[in-house]
Length: 216
Image (cartoon, rainbow, N blue to C red; front, side):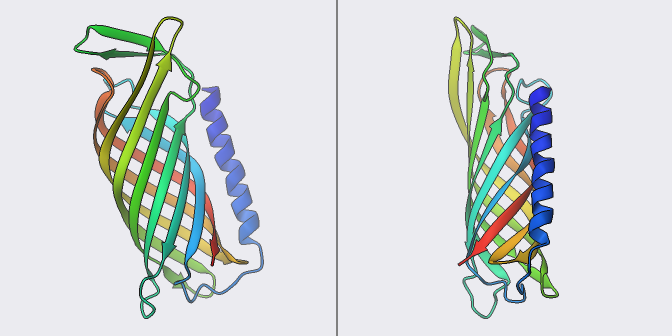
């Protein structure tokens, strides 16, 4: 529980940093076609499988770096991008994983028991309102690569699984000096990941965070 509180406290601090950025001298957002690099950070809730899965409810710290641009000069609102999300579950509580048809039972813990890598291609529409505020809904498709890593004094498991995923997201942003700052929300659904008899199922993720971006 202490680690979950740490993740949520970090998100509150980042929200405060975003408010400070938003108060900086603003530039115009009327021309949203700038190429940019953005970095988001926040809280993610991850599920692999249903209530019977050992991985059905995990809280994570998530990083969301993204590179995007507008491919059409006459349609700067349309943006293409590539992202590589990284989610770290920070929870050293013990888990029991059953694998190999129930013949192998592993009980262990880890400071980072679950890691999720999320490379995606993205398409979005950035709609400006006035000189500074914009809303950017979009979709992303890609792959999700998860690592389950647990160990005890006598046993260990280090297993990877992968699945295709699709994401819907929205960025709420304000233009600031040299770029922008804002809030991010997204929901991702992926295919089946299999880490064991009681650790398998469809992948789902909800994310909320803050981000900053630089134009170049």
